[in-house]
Image 1 (cartoon, rainbow, N blue to C red):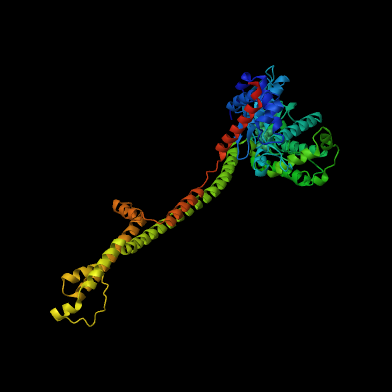
Image 2 (cartoon, rainbow, N blue to C red):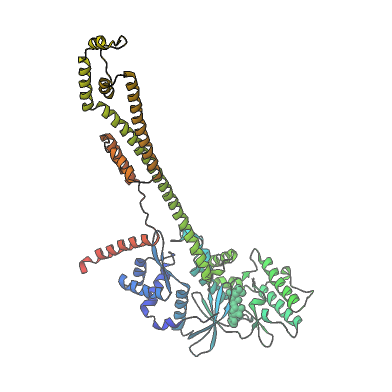
Length: 538
Ligand SMILES: Nc1ncnc2c1ncn2[C@@H]1O[C@H](COP(=O)(O)OP(=O)(O)OP(=O)(O)O)[C@@H](O)[C@H]1O
């Protein structure tokens, strides 16, 4: 518990508060208020508002929030505190703020002073912010107002507490004197004493017990039940008198659960007395025995605190979101938001990874196709080689030569038997050439066949090597030279390749601009609009 830093109040000018109020008003319908709206509510030029908002952001009185769809400003708790304090200062109710003296689950209590430096108690209600923020779909706009904003709920709690303070005080109940209320801040008399939970010894526990039970009954007779009547909400003065504090949970005795609340209050006191003072009484008030004599609950409604307001407030209490003032909650909420965004991001990153997988598959397919194309081209090369004109010329020459050879002469000269030979022999070139020089035809043919086979094997081996290297992804000079041999791609092959490249480029993942970057884009757009708007003035 520390001191509230209100030093900045001194340096804030009228415009700062004007803009702060504009943000507050905008938050009636928006969780974050766009700059344009702040400007139009404040009635100040957008440039001026922006400068003021920057100042307010620096002092953490407003916060700038960027989201996927829009960005804007929201009032911080500190900003709301400043607004309430400033209003009360101008009414000459509050003159100073001191140390924090209490921290409840739904409020922060500070000691303060009026302009004459008399002690005051400043109770800042902090209620329901989380219950609002948790509903994601109401992020930008309270469409059907299923849940109310923390501003609204805190204000309700303060209004109710102040109304009860006044009403109870008028009826002679021991409560602090209510001074004023503004927004979520209740100003009341500072009670100098100790909360009952810190009291370990009393002179007469039975008398105190009776006083407390009488208080519960008196409240019920006036038509209300405290609802949180326990040792934490009772302050004991030096003379052992007890002062009641904390009334926003009060309910009417006509409430559907009135009996339950009444019994709970009674049980709280009994349990505490038994535990702390070892005092147990046979007597305790029963709800059925209560005789209604006043109608404070109805009067309260007449004071402006409507049933609808009561319903909203009770709903917030039922939800139990009392940690509205904990920044940690806000952070958790932010984390949730971020997780939500991350989920979306991860969705997109999933799709990104899916895209990457698809590209990898494409690449593999492409590699495979390329290798196949190379094999095909090598085969084609072989065919082309076989069909080359040079080869054909050479073959025809050889054939003519063969034709010119007089086999009959040879037969008679050498006694050679050619009965098995056809009239015209079409030998492979090597065979024919050697045939003239060598005597054994069959041996030569076999050799040539082997050589040809060897050539085939060599080519196949080369192709296999290329495939292997390609798969390994190792691009060596040898591989390159082999690949260059595949430069004799046919036109269709090149077309197909180009089409594949085009398709690949098309399928490249487009980066989705998100988060801050998207806001940057939007801001640029906004700036362009502003420039266009004021084009004539410059
Ligand atoms: N008028 C007062 N004078 C002196 N101290 C006060 C006064 N009002 C509140 N306090 C101190 O502030 C503490 C919190 O106040 P209060 O119980 O009203 O807050 P709360 O948020 O409703 O707390 P909870 O609901 O947890 O009991 C009290 O325990 C008490 O010490």
